[in-house]
Image (cartoon, rainbow, N blue to C red; front, side, top):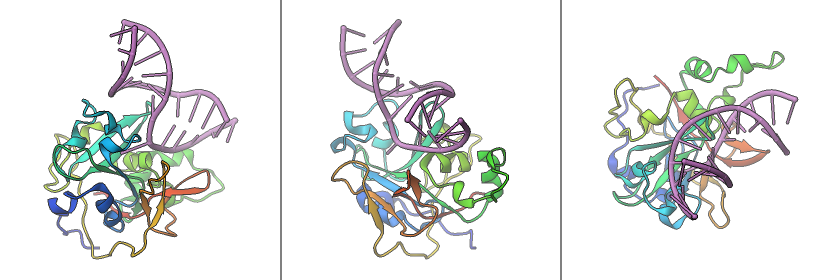
Length: 209
DNA sequence: GGGGGGATTCGG
DNA sequence: CGAATCCCCCCG
């Protein structure tokens, strides 16, 4: 695997979340996402306008928006669109390509391992909070620039690259809210995050360093 | 200053 | 299916 691929350029992110989301499929580092359209979407954090927490989502494209929820979980989004507009893609799943040992450790999967079952790499990043845990992403990474890959102090750089694998011609789609089929995933990929047996999003590849 | 609820996950 | 477990945000 070639690791010297450049981060995706700012222009990749400088479009609507709905344009960016399906094209994130099969990019390396991320896989699986969901688009939110800010002010027009009542299920977005941004629908009531900018707050201290959601400031990043209103900022320039190509940055991470990371928030904390349920008292224990983090979720990461890719900020899209133009500065001043709330637009982001929630990263719902990733297919581990490398760094599985780091991911296992970060998620402490060994302690939860059922003795009768082998490790399943599918459990590492098959959910928005799981992938953050596997990658060690938390609120200190909020605002990180995915284009320059500049990180805050004591933080690892985070970015997304294209290894030449095109996004699926016909991505799977599902909805979270009615009339908003804004979840895109790679059909048939076992890493796609699921809930109660229903496909709800996810799918692409990743590595951690 | 108080209270309701959350872009989830895991175990029972 | 409910608990875990902070923090954000709205309201008074």
